[in-house]
Image (cartoon, rainbow, N blue to C red; front, side, top):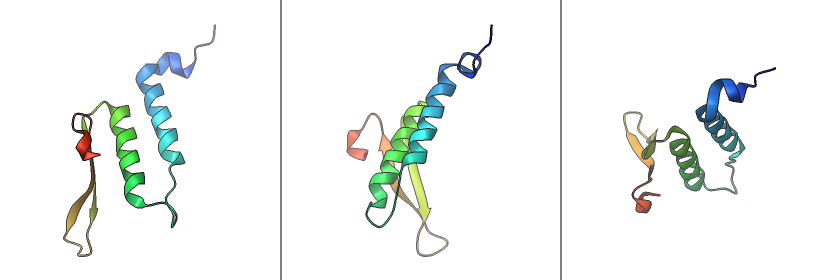
Length: 80
C-alpha cells in the first residue's frame, strides 16, 4: 500500500501548504492597496503557524528607519 505525503507529514504540513498557496495567490498592483494585502498575508501566516501575533515591518525612506506597517493579533481584533 502506497503512503501519501499527507500521511507522512501530517496535518501541520497540510495546513502550511494550504497557507503557502493562499499567500501565493495574493496580488498587489496599482489597483490593490498594499496594506490590506499585507494584513491578509499576516493573518494567513499567523493562522498557519499557530501564533497569536504577526507583524510586518519595512524600511522607511531613510535606510536606518524600520517601521511596523502591519500588526495582526488574534486576541485583539482592533490590530487587524
